[in-house]
Length: 161
Ligand SMILES: CC(C)(COP(=O)(O)OP(=O)(O)OC[C@H]1O[C@@H](n2cnc3c(N)ncnc32)[C@H](O)[C@@H]1OP(=O)(O)O)[C@@H](O)C(=O)NCCC(=O)NCCS
Image (cartoon, rainbow, N blue to C red):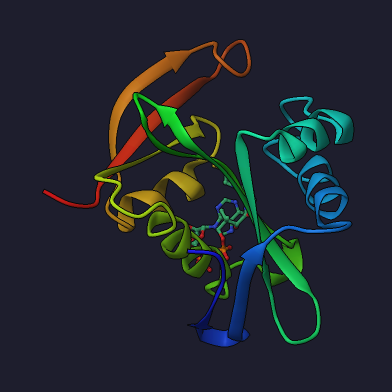
């Protein structure tokens, strides 16, 4: 899948597409300016090098007027299955369904994938609650992984038998 339109609650029609041009800088700036990346010390340059990394796929979600969110994925990030490395929505656009719509798009992006993995910090209970509502199950805990004193929880969703 390359791009598509999706309906998104209060945000109306959402276009989701592969990043091009200055989308990489835009996504890196978005993440570097907000938690959990700020809390973890992931700065603009660290984010940009990951966004531009050839093994990663960066998707942009936008309204008819502007960019709203980004998602960064690796096709074989965990045990050969797709992995969602980052999901970020502009602060003023959060809790309007954009993240859920982009997450659903990511889940079906790599055709034929049976599992979809992601990690979320122990300090991010609202994101964990969202993923659990969307069908993700915690299958692992990585203590002191991204930050000393916190855990990264590994979640997986089964997409097909
Ligand atoms: C987490 C996030 C991607 C969800 O996207 P969204 O468009 O806000 O989410 P939706 O509108 O589809 O769903 C709403 C749910 O998202 C979660 N959420 C909303 N704002 C959030 C925030 N600032 N941080 C973490 N989770 C948040 C909550 O579970 C919320 O449900 P609630 O209002 O009942 O608590 C988005 O809020 C975000 O970018 N947060 C900051 C970055 C982050 O935590 N990313 C995930 C890292 S694993």
